[in-house]
Amino acid sequence: MKKLTALLVMLFLVKAVMTQSLPGDSSKTLQEIKVTGRKAPMQMSPGKITIKVGSTITNAGTTILEMLERLPGVTVDKSGMISLKGKPEVLVMIDDKLTYLGAAELSNLLASMNSQQVEQIELMPNPPAKFDASGNAGIINIKTIRSREEGLNGTILLSSGIGRYLKNNYSLSLNYKSKRIYTFMNYSLTANKGFTDIYALRNYYKSGMLSSVLDQPTCLTEKNFGNSIRTGIDYNITDKTIAGISFTGLTNRRDGESEARATWLSGTGTFDSAIGTSSSSLFKFRTGGINLNLRHTFSKNQQLAIDVDGLKYKIGNEQSFTSQVLAAGGTIDSSRGHLPSTINIVTGKADYTMRFGENKLESGFKISNIQTDNVAAYELMEGMQWKEDLDKSNHFYYKENIYAAYSNLEYKYKSIYLSAGLRYEQTRYQAIQTSNLQNKDSSFSRNYYSLFPSASLTWQTDSSSSF
Image (cartoon, rainbow, N blue to C red; front, side, top):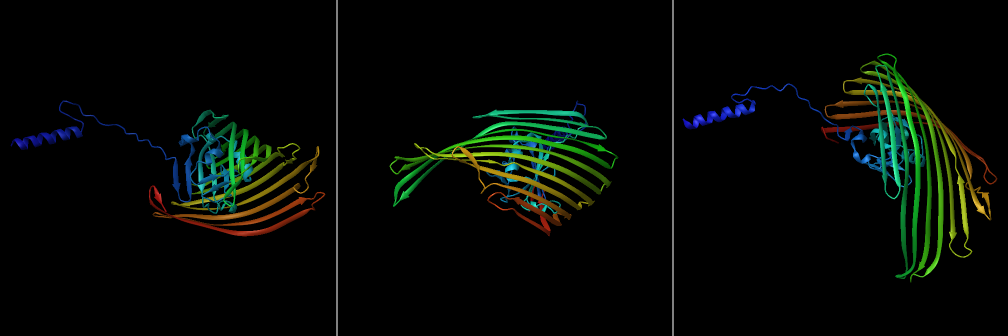
């Protein structure tokens, strides 16, 4: 009987604890539960990896180029060439717009932009048919921050650091949003100085014995100063139609200098000879662009997007190089180059999206016109005068038109995800290289078309794993 009584008392106490009610206490009812969550910095979806830049503290105070070097699967070599999963010549987009720049120019552009303006980055190793066929090595899409809060708001970010030299990255963001209007302005300034020290020591052997030694230290310094601005306005014409216009502008200046000395020594360490080299470069980059866009929603499952873009790049590049034998009466060789270029781009595209359940069909077309004008003027020092280097100098003009149409299907069945598409592109280009006193005029042109199929299959085993 005592055991039964003790058991009943124990059950009563357990029940009282679980219901948060004891004899003499008033009962309490939990009125509300709030559960908050935060998305992971990196999210994987079929065919794409999305990285939330603002969630990663290591990106604070960096440029976009420095930030890309830290992303999984992305590598940037010393010449600025960007690779994705080992594939070079990857396409880089900013807010879904291609940059149309070579490796060196793209590297300078990204090095002048503050990573604090970036909201997220999309990595697409196998892009669908919606994107240009030249991006089959992969696409990196950089998306800048756009506030979704109503009213007027802004953010100022200041970042400075010092190692051997000072490093500064500043940015300002302003946004205004109402029921009908959304307008924004993003401005960034970078002012950095960096260096690279290289030391090479080479030992040469003959018949197993040390015969000579090459000692070669090199020091490179670089200054980078850039400004960039993006501004625009979107207007809700109706509840289903949005029209917008945006402007982009950027100026960048990079000054580089290098000093190197190559000293030859005998196997016993006796001085033999030495050569000193020095070089300098001045890179100036300016760009301006305008975008006109229209979005119309026919229904919750159908949407049409139209974009017209105009871009102009103006690039100036000055180079000089000198080498000298470090001895009495040693010879001196000097050369310099003046390499200006301009790029004019006009594109227009329309994309139609239709959703049915979890599946999606996209179709569209695109027209682009690209014109480049490149001058390479090299000179050699002869005696005390500069003389044109006709072997290297040229003037190159290039014009290209591309007409493209595509259709891409994204289909999901249980845990299987399929993306398949086909893209058609017709390309026409014409190139002219003008003559000089040593080389004749030359030109070439081509007109061709190609079909580019693409497909990917993903098996989602659970919420965090897929094949």
